[in-house]
Length: 56
View (cartoon, helix red, strand yellow):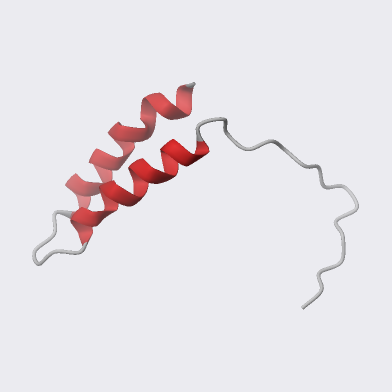
């Protein structure tokens, strides 16, 4: 599938800590794949884990 170029688009750099953020998210979401997972708690934990990384 070929997608036509976007006339008004712009390329933005990725976050300098993207790999570290991705790792925190992946490991944090592991808590969802268990019986009786605490979904809200797991997602809050992920947000807490990456919050300071996103601010950098």
